[in-house]
Length: 244
Image (cartoon, rainbow, N blue to C red; front, side):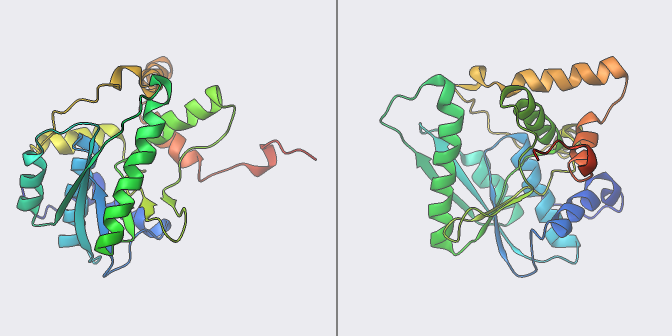
């Protein structure tokens, strides 16, 4: 389970992650960094990648992981064992809510509550930065959702500073497509927490995931998510509408 050096990993995923880290000033040597470990393939793979970078690149930092149980208790031994094999600290808490939440708002509320729980624990541990497993496909899906549903041009940022009292949010995998993450997760037989969100069926994001797949088929071009992500760094200001 512990990463082993491979010269081909640079082109596969390391270079793109290091580029994101450098371009958006995500991590400095010696810092304490934690990964929000949901147990899904994205966060599991992100933890593996950061461990690999910490072991085999010039960048050295203190890595840990944190998991927030959502509204129920369940077995997380697989996550604890994974972190134990990677030789990194593992933190855990449980999110509880006594109020009934409308299904339409559950994803937004859950995200806010989770970040609050993560912030509380990391503050106790003296950790000021937390990494999330969002990738290029998430960037593209969010952009389309904002354009179509919110009439807004934009997606989430690779680095977000909310306030001095909140941990800085980092997204080191924004240049990696989901297919690369899936391949890395499968090839290294990385674990997966089988706990399924009870509200997953009402997640609106799945529609835009299908839309991107349809776009790739329609114009016979793969890597649309990567292209959309790069377009956010290559704005044509002369053709962006501005009110006079």
